[in-house]
Image (tube, rainbow, N blue to C red; front, side, top):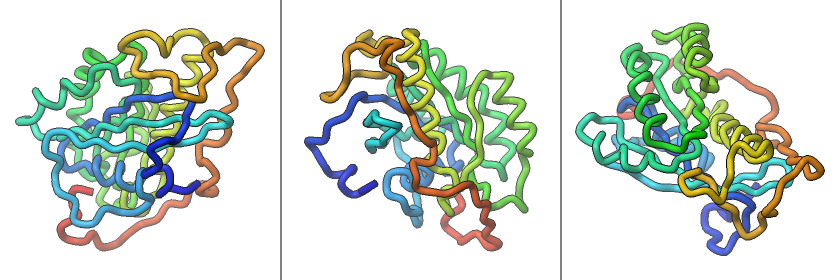
Length: 240
């Protein structure tokens, strides 16, 4: 996939447009995770997001091209009233915590409650335990986070915005789940507030004789999952 072309081509065609929000406590690495997803590189010297920042990327699942509108929200309490207004009509939520910060994990319920109250009724949420490269500093075990995800009916995985390990998976997993809802008839892209709309290439009718094919979540970019560890965390990059 040509990432530069996807980022700059203004006249690109796509089948569906989906709105995502990236939420969670400040310092969990939300912006770094998003930057690695959109630019395929680590974001050096990242600063805390002020308010909301927007980016986008077009991905392909099977034969479907999907343009993701990505709203990166600030984690600080003082911006909460501003950022919550951007939750409205979101089809997907990437809920991020830091595996080395138990406080960021304990506050997940509040973030999820806000998203469910304000976003699309069919909101798909993926819980991401960021900074998996810092396993030696871990304060939240994978099993505990997995249980929380199951209890709250959300998807779960761990990723590293530093190494790039698993950074694509939450975005593609959410898109795949949303496409399945469209295929089943549970989600109507033409309904206001669904968080999804048809693109120029879209077929207006999806039925049992025209099944959606999603392909691999890895998008062919990575073969398998390789867990990398960085023994030293660079000063100034603690939020990522």
